[in-house]
Image (cartoon, rainbow over all chains, first blue to last red; front, side):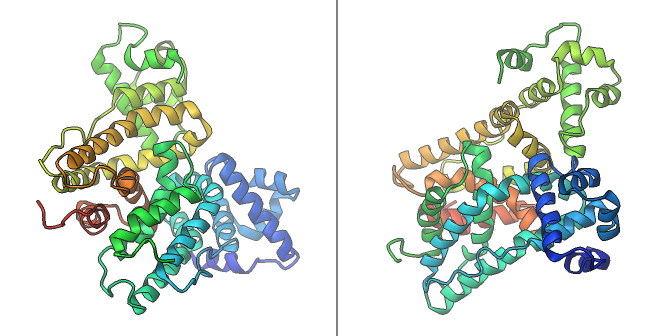
Length: 205
Length: 205
């Protein structure tokens, strides 16, 4: 991502627009991405949805990719970072619950941006930073705490694949089985597949 | 999928077009989907790419969704169905190799169609039938054979997730780690995560 885009993400170029109004723009952009995809998104459409002049959007964010990058950054959430139940098994169960809750909302967004991101390295980078890396880091922290407490070995070879499985299973289930990965499904996955792979006891709380 | 679309998938409406020419159309459609996505695909574009009249396409396939459905059906491959190494561990290792080989080709197509499919039940259904269900069935057969040979229990609770894990990891890794799920990565995943989850010995060939 360019330095300009990074600065845009955190500091709107003009101070006339309130932070609340900026969040309204960001929310509108993400909603429109979920509804119609990246290709169909236009500055005109965002202007119409948010009842502002197109020139305001261009002054503030420069271009459509910059606006999308800013919206992804500006609405960044660390869903998993607050989890700390005291055991790795408890943390992973809680992660399944949190991921399932956000799954309905984020899956359409990820699909909408997936193809566009494959063609735009800047967009892919912004998506990874805004949506994915914070969650990956949180899962790594859980695994690290589990190893420190002796619940899994320090060099547990299955640990490498915990994040990619959680996100992959969440995204793949709708396509494969025609149903979202809800809390019951993800919890069953965590207990029946991740726990034995990591050598954790499913009866641990 | 409508009956008309199903018939279209298997029997072109007019016999003037040779089967070889039909495959050319299908290949062009899938290539264009990988390159630019579903929204950007037009009958005009397919006609230009294949050097035929637009009216020919409309006569033959009726509409863009019908043409895409026909192309997915008409190029259906059963990648995993021929695998039978004699052990479940060997079958899963071979599945990892085959999936990795097809991953570069199919990931862009899946991304391209992912968002469109969420908005079109007919397209989602055609994708599942053409690309996914044959592979799921093949993995179920592998697991069933493994259970019959006593390599895993009949009611192994981790077996439910093997397909969704394999496809999910293949699709999620590029987004999470910025690299395709190649043979070395998927083999490591199978040995270090699936094998212990299923209770298989990684040293088995």
